[in-house]
Length: 130
Image (cartoon, rainbow, N blue to C red; front, side, top):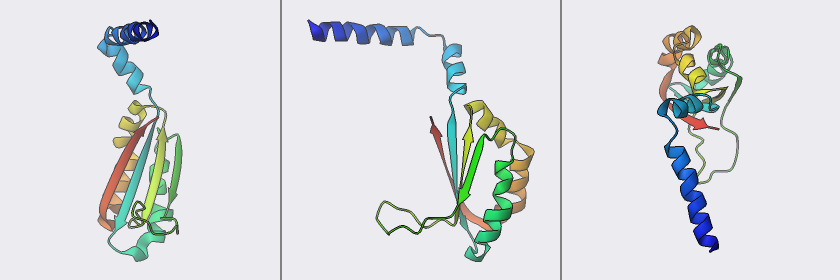
């Protein structure tokens, strides 16, 4: 009897979710907070300090960025699951997916790319919904 109730409850929740209109779902997703993590591999490791202190902080000044953190790989032990190969990383927090989308065309973000993209050989981004 208990498993039947659980099944019916689950079915009811799934039915309610399925009946939500697509615009409602899209609006809720747009309000979802997110974290945007960016990892840079520089052509010349000697430029790490300049890139960390002059270039990357431009991203944190973009108008829709809520919080900003930048750093370099921690001097932790070498393990198979730890990647110390990048030179600089930054983490940007946004209040919504819309804010992150606006950030992509922010004049400071575009100026950062134009001015400093020649300094990196690779960049990797991880976006996380929270």
